Image 1 (cartoon, one colour):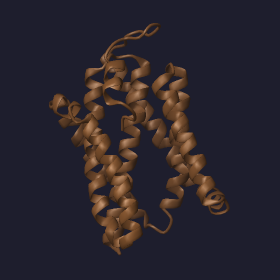
Image 2 (cartoon, rainbow, N blue to C red; image 1 turned 135 degrees about the horizontal axis):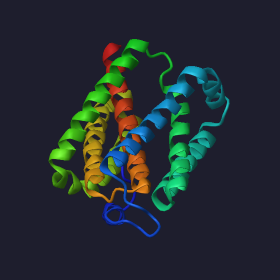
Image 3 (spheres, rainbow, N blue to C red; image 1 turned 90 degrees about the vertical axis):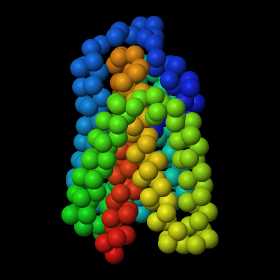
Image 4 (cartoon, one colour; image 1 turned 45 degrees about the horizontal axis):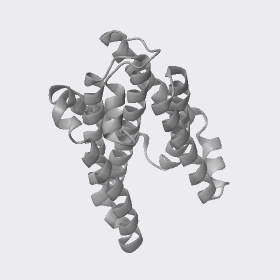
Length: 230
């Protein structure tokens, strides 16, 4: 999920910046894969080893304070990823992934393990499918960057208003809409990966975007499956 002006992001990643070195396609893809695994590993360890402590922390904290801290960390991480070098980008990526693990601990409460596993499998299949399509039709996805940003913005605003006016039943439409938007974001960010300069910094930048796409896709799929189970 590319945050900010998509034109600037594409221009920034299209060439090798001063002090950077181009790497092979294999190394580039390995870094992206390794960074995604690092983010998912952080989330897995948080959920499996520290779920109880994370839930106690969140429940004992003022909700507004938690939201402020969460978004502060994620925004700071995004700034580091998009504006820093490779080392700072790695720290920023970790700042994004770590608090999401805490959110997952709270979100997964009361949801059967089989439902979670099914959501993981479906999210993986959808992600791989859109990566393949993004490879085959990169220009189509690259042309959608600004449209996707606006679609995401209006989805968040519309979802909040609908929940206030119509309650949880209105959430189903936005769960499906979110699934579609984040699936397209995966295709968009993977298309970026296939057209940008192959540097370590760009690989980490793209990993952060893909990580956010996949996590958000998983959460929407999980919500849909859990709603259908009930």
